[in-house]
Length: 519
Ligand code: G
Ligand code: G
Ligand code: MN
Image (cartoon, rainbow, N blue to C red):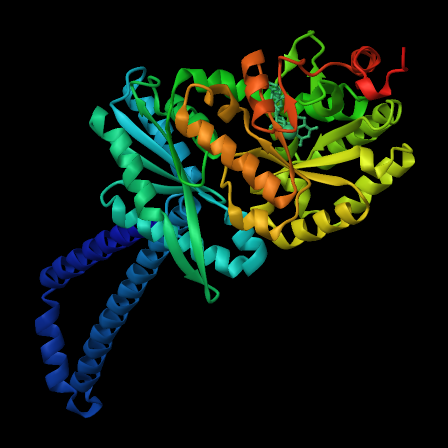
């Protein structure tokens, strides 16, 4: 449009110039000026000289007018060019943080691929996301969430000046470091973590931001930026499985892990619905009497190819996919039904996931499941880990009180691995404490571990809480624990988790002496 106008202006100017030159030549050839002067001198009465001056003045005015319109046109064209540039900018930037976005990244990759073909120059990539961002959004509102993102962008920009910092997703950021030296990658990841972590004030609240960083570089982890972005994503996913503040550098083994995870997430819903995940039962032995006192139900999933999927993996997947409630409900029904068929007073213990303790109806569900299966509440035990109690202490308190009120026992699982907090022991009431197997494994040879096990046993005695030692694998461990006064033992020495029919036949063989008919 502008080009066409300029072209016409030039042709017009040339035509007018030609016309002027032609008129000048014609006037010279006809001596027009002399005739005009003579004419004016002869006819003073018509004031033609004034008229001429007016015509010349009008000409000049027209010229000025034309110049002004021309400058308007210029300004208009500049404004339009800028607007076009802005549209480009807007398409390739995020309006909230003013950082380049995914489109920018796509263009950058295209440019590199066109320019370098196969071997791209060395480039470090960090993918960064915020832990608990969704909770901030949900609890404090989207404005607070926006503020958090803007603040994060600012911190990253300050930490990486003259480097491309992008926002590539809801709460995901990226740093692309061209020409970065190989050994600086972990250091840069650390810099990103340090820059972003810490507290932010939003909506009048101090928010603690957690940061996860996945890092990868061209050419160590792939020949192109495109591939390395994927590698950094895999590393970020691995970092997400860790703590709140976590850094992972890409490692090819992660790829296999991610594929396994993706398979789990796909296959789990069907497995939960079809009942492919079943409870197995590991015996818990009364150490003084030597008989099986109860069983701990442990979920087992035999995949279609026959191999067992590790429970910590599918439990974590169920938590991730929001299926833990459904899975747990299926399992608990089966467990209560199975245990109702065992002779009294053999009991069954059921593990709860920390996530489930946020459900205020949990206790009622559990009580109902036992009742429906006609399993007396006294023969059902629920195992809870400390982390579950710390996340939602008020709800946990209510759930525990309700369960105990109904006669269901509550055990504190894996004691010794987490916080092992005395405050928790004093705040909540437990019927049983389970000493984690990591203590039992080595306590015989280790004076200090021995003292700790002895102290936990003393604590149990003082609080009137039964103690189970987990992970007993050797007869020597069993003997020592019995001598120390530990009431229950569990571990491969007595048996691993087994299907229900095997548990039933174990019970038939292993009855407490007092129950056996007198000879
Ligand atoms: O059985 P091991 O068997 O490998 O179990 C691994 C982990 O999975 C343990 O911490 C155990 O408490 C947990 N687990 C096993 N079964 C269940 C279950 O039914 N529900 C929940 N929430 N955790 C379970
Ligand atoms: O976290 P929780 O205590 O619920 O999990 C029990 C886990 O301990 C299960 O994974 C179970 O298979 C495992 N386990 C049970 N007995 C033993 C044992 O004697 N040695 C080892 N190493 N693990 C055991
Ligand atoms: Mn357990």
